[in-house]
Image 1 (cartoon, rainbow, N blue to C red):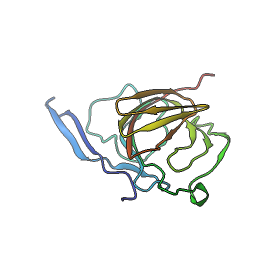
Image 2 (image 1 turned 45 degrees about the vertical axis):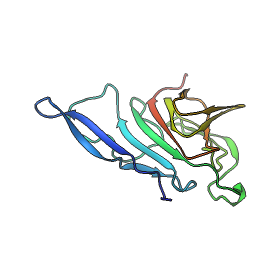
Image 3 (image 1 turned 180 degrees about the horizontal axis):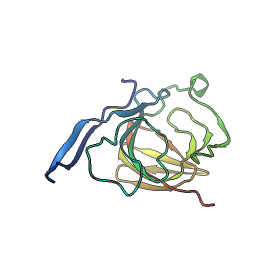
Length: 187
């Protein structure tokens, strides 16, 4: 198994100087963040929009690093997360990356909140200052909320509105995509 997620091919199309459609990039996405707690798992950011409206001219590669956990406040990105279930015999006491739930910690600059509780197969309770369109592309994932859990299968979509949540992978290798759009928390 590799250290990070499986490579994802990214074909980006646009227009040439004459206004004809053409391929701008055809390669594996380079903006990858392996998850040290889950060998073979991690996140791949395919495209980043620094602000909206988007300027469509030019040949820039908006899928290049650096990697950010949350989208720009007036922009968005497309990200995929590959995840694996806990291995047989998993014990959180032996996992250097696991930690128990904690009091919420809010980042005043980004609005990202973290309540911890990360363990194998569970991302840990967190929130981002964004509207997230999440969809299951392969496998099964469970959306974990405060006091509720919903199993999601390929073709299921979730719209998140800046709420605390976690994602659990309890059964198989899964792939989930997200379009994350910067937002403001209600004052």
